[in-house]
Amino acid sequence: MYASKFGVDESKMMERLWGENYFDPTTKKWTSKHTGSATCKRGFVQFCYESIKQVINTCMNDQKDKLLPMLQKLGIIMKSDEKDLTGKALMKRVMQNWLPASNALLEMMIYHLPSPAKAQRYRVKNLYEGLLDDIYASAIRKCDSEGPLMLYVSKMIPASDKGRFYAFGCVFSGKVATGMKVRIMGPNYVPGQKKDLYVKNAQRTVIWMGKKQESVEDVPCGNTVAMVGLDQFITKNATLTNEEEVDACPIKAMKLSVSPVVHVAVQCKMASDGLTFPSLLKV
Image 1 (spheres, rainbow, N blue to C red):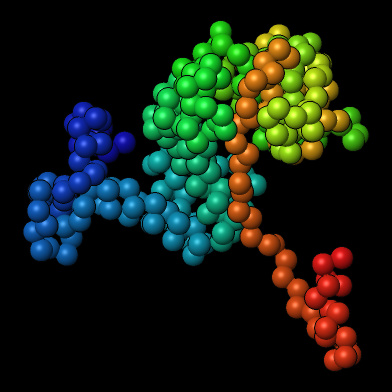
Image 2 (cartoon, rainbow, N blue to C red):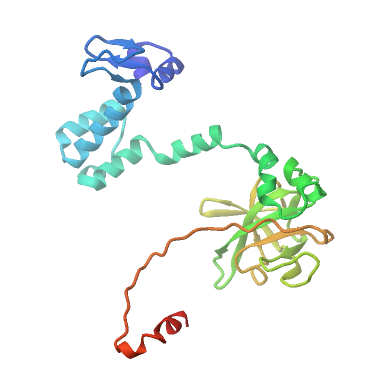
């Protein structure tokens, strides 16, 4: 919008929005240093922050006589029922139509997050519990689709069938396929022992897209996957490998720090129960 207004290339305009670039609307000039003028501001503040702030304030103050012409200039189309909104509800709807967070977040992920092939080169030491020079660590490091299966299930998602769950996780090496026998190492598994160890079939492999699921034949490394038929053997998290990979070590379990949602203050009704009170709370 500003690039066309000033008649400059969009990429050049983007460069002016960051760093030591100041614009003074009074003189209509760019400078690399602040001139001391009250109207001289950084490029981002002048052209991004101030515009967003103006739209938000206009919405929150219910100044629709100013808002509607403003939205028209920005090319924002509001439905008739949305125009009847007021205050915060109006502001949220306008911002969702003008600058949807989903587009910005997706673009940031594409441009700034490393690909699995790149990230796993340096993250393998934080992922794998075994020796970092064995075939499994090497396959994870290379994100090798032809290597042994190394898959970490991080979450169990409720399915439409009552009482059933999808095992959702990330494939770090190899590939998982529909009907494939997998070796399940639960959170209490110890290498060399059979505790919390199962060999079962992944009845179905599914790609999760928002609220929709699509069944596929197989899912290679570098992707997330949901599996059907493993919920009887996985309660929260687990590592999956090929059936024959008996010497593979599990992937390190994620440690999540969760703050309590509800705080309740309790006290003894009888002061004499004070000694037994702490032990009763643990029950």
